[in-house]
Structures are given as structure tokens and as C-alpha cells.
Image (cartoon, rainbow, N blue to C red; front, side, top):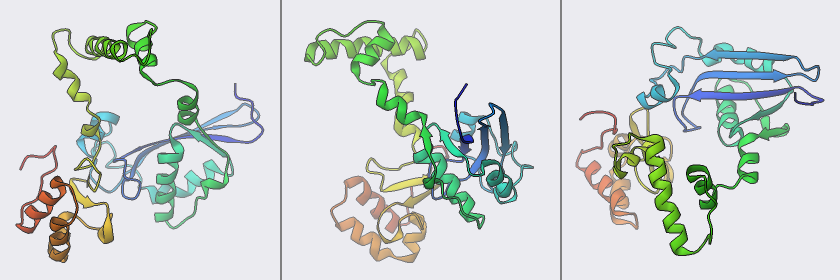
Length: 262
């Protein structure tokens, strides 16, 4: 049992995506730990008033139909704040994601949530600080061996080969080849269009993430609003991927969200 002298609320959010400024909560769960060792639970699904992407439904098991009759966040914001009270806060990656997004949702509902003034206990930060996540740790985890001569090029590449073989065996079918690991490509789970993160998908639409239109307009809206800006991008020092995007937008050709058919 936790030994605490002040109420502690552990928070986790399920959301429509990972864009803090735009995405919405679809489920909020909290456990309040009291110094008396009593524990209280709050768990509620929320109607985000927007489409839940398929990738999120696959991950969370929450579909648009599941939350169609759930309350909107602004309808439960008071009870959320009342449950939290003046408690300290905890969670996994809460400082970088859950708390900033929750703060924005609360502010969108017309109220305030100054979580930065509280004690925050982030289990992810503690984990990353105290547990190694290097090649030696991966070799021990997947291959159950200690890596001898670490940082010797041949030893490291041999260990990496063994790790890849073990990952295929652990996560894929025994008959799969190396290409089966491509489904774990991190980019497939991130909503960015390009390697540099200058454009990102949100709710099936492509938004600019830099410059004067950052996080405000889709590429289609910019093409209608300010073609000169796209012409500047096309001629400035950007990657060929971004220049090609601008060129095609000027021609009225726009990319389609990867999970949708043209």
C-alpha cells in the first residue's frame, strides 16, 4: 500500500489521438488514494463530438457507437474537477500527454486546471531513469543472455540479429520472415505525414504544423486562402517531400489519409 499524507489521484486518458491541441477524451479513469488507505474510482466514457479514427478503435476497443450516448466532456467537467480536488497527481507519461490534454479540455469547457502547481509522480519517467533500455537490455530481455563485449561492432551486430530473430518468434507467425516486423513501424502509429513532422493528419485531414498557419488550417484551406504561401514553400529550403506536397496542392491535388481509399 502507498504511504501518503495527501490525497493522490492516478489518471489515465483514452483519446481520439495524440495531438494535445486538437484531440479529445473518449474515456477518463481515475483512482483516488487517501491517506486512510481508502481508494475511490472514477471511470467514464466521453462523447468527443468527433470521429474516432479506426486506429484508435483498434487500440482501445472504443468505437463511435460505443460513445454515442455518453456525456460530452463539458457535461462532466465539474465532477472531474471535484473528484481530483487538491490532490497530488500521478500516471504514466502524464506530464507530457494526459495532464496537458486534460488541462486543454477543461479550459475549453470554461474552467481552469493548474496541474503544474501540484506534486506530479510520473511512473514513465521513473522507469526510464532507472531501467536500461539499450542493446544489452534488449538482448537480455529477448535472448535471455548477457551481451559480452558490448560496443564491439561485431558483438553488437550479432546480438541485433539474434534480437530480430527472437522478435519474429515472439510477435509474429513462425513462418513469417523479417518483413513481418514492418507492421511495428512507429510511423504507422504516428499521425505525421512527413519525416520532419511539418504536416500531420488529424481526423482524416492534413494540417500544417509550422509557420503562420501552424495547427490552424488544413492543406486544402491554405491552398484556397494563400497560394503564395505554398509557392514560397515550393521554392524555399524544404525537403523534396514537402515541396512535392506544396506543388501538388497548388494543382488541386491533395494526399488522402492512409487508412482511407481515394
